[in-house]
Length: 634
Image (cartoon, rainbow, N blue to C red; front, side, top):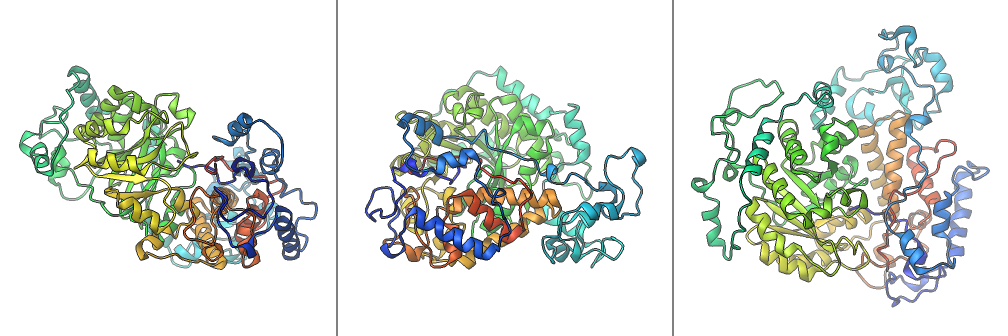
């Protein structure tokens, strides 16, 4: 779903000079007084940047563009169209990547972070520093006088290693506490769905039993595939199919069979603890008419979702998690399931290619995480997923797809949803034929992205096809997705008869889009307001990833990935006509102030400069290249 905004300008047919006509196809119609040339644009930023930075980067090597980035940003290079298209698609797989741990070579012992006088169980064998004074000598300078964690929770769990430690360190390096014990309790209440260490060890040793999943899989393997049911033509026939009296016991377990769970529970015993829910008794997912923030790879992290919730997103979903990695207890994958307290309607999205792993993963999620729905990714177009039979490939593997949906539905206690594309090939649509089947398999809601896998983002989403599919899927709710960047786009999308809309790239370009849709207006947001949004994101990031060197650099990395999208936004006051279209490339233009111009730059060096305004100077030899490339401007 995610793709980079660091667009090669040659991909769109521009020559890099200004003077593009407002009526030129594929180019945003910016007022003539703001348009400029590439040379004037970068010359202005360079001159202003030198004034503001006062020689902070004397040799300029720290902010140099990576070689791969230079190739993509230089205009006028002669090469074949095929080579240009090949390079413009997919991921930057060869991008330079430095792990955050490499920025902090002399690390302080984790056992002593809270209390330097504590005892380390490894003693002299410990590979980390134990001397506070020695650590402080090599530690980089603080990035600011205020620590977000200390101000929010009363105590910073990163102690002496915090890059804002001056706000909460005593004279002898002790970690000060404003309100005793508030940090642990408050943060635990605000963020849920963490992975328990005991469960992680069981998963790694393959000692977790999946009784419900195994019984469901056994039942699916023994019974012949059911004949496809005739499509429901009217809403009056739906209650008959959903009747509790006609629903079979989903896994053949009987009503009195308790679900197996490794968790220790306390409190009164309820019916839900000992009686399996039948499909008709499951919690209903009623989100029709709500604004749904799409699960976005890399950029759809918890801090970004908090920003979108602030601006009016109703439904949020975690980033795509690979089911096999979840079953192996990988912490990085389980981190994608975390839920903040502000996310009142929240789901997780999983990806897999086989019924056994997906069904076991569903049972594991049902036991361990607090979510309102689970989504299956049947729309991922990347080769890494597709070639293993997952993502879009499931649309061509209907037998496996059916077993995955029915197996997961039997072991889940929350609604199951699916996200799909129109099909795999550009001219062969499959969604309309799969929707009635998914409805019969028990899917609660389907989201349809109006593009095929092959198409990617080269053409506009097909909302006429989405309208046809909404009629075919009825009474199952269908959400539409694709090319929504203004409230007019959202209104036109709702006129197609969909139950709601999912917003993906539009939220990355302007997260205040949710406010615009709800208030039915264009928001000419100022550059200072946009910087405040980025500042809030960095605060949320430091709270989520940590305020030590690793946490700061991880926050910076995700901020830079997001800035590679934000640079594509054109301020409302600069446009000749409204609204901006998502497939229109911004030409070179001067903003109404320096910051607005800086935010319009598509060079990674300028994104790094913005990050330094919020997170301080980058480490030595720092380079950045966006994870994803795009070809949306054609």
